[in-house]
Structure formats: structure tokens, C-alpha cells
Length: 88
Image (cartoon, rainbow, N blue to C red; front, top):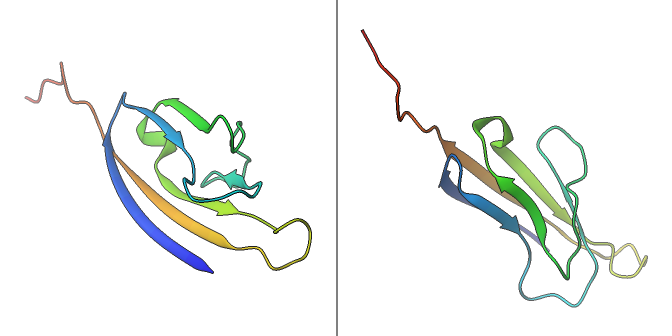
């Protein structure tokens, strides 16, 4: 199966990615194509998120190597912190 979703967070929020209804191993790929550090048991911790981390994250499983796994995507939008920003 395939799924998509969107979430908006504030810059500096702690973000941990995970799938709640799974007994399978899976990986998470960041928008730049790099793997996100973590594990299904502990979650994939992005830490205090910044606007640079915004984008589409891909969750992938391979269902034990059978080739019948699934992918799902989550788009994360980050609202920049404008505290202390002075416009003239």
C-alpha cells in the first residue's frame, strides 16, 4: 500500500517520526535522499527541526525481503521562528 500525509510544525519543535501500526522493520529517507538515523522501535529523531529539514520524508518497508513491502510519504512544512526579526 501507499500513503501520503502533511504536517506543519514550528521551527525548534522536536520531531520524531514513526509508524504506529507496524510490526515490520522500515526505513525513513529524508528529502535530500539521505537515511534518517533511528529505528522502528525508538523512532527516527529529527531533533529540534529547522526550515532546512522541511520536505517529503519517505517511509519504506520490504516485508521481510519478499518485495511486497510498502511506501508512504509525509510532507513536513516548517514555520520559521521570526522572534527577534526586525523588518525596516
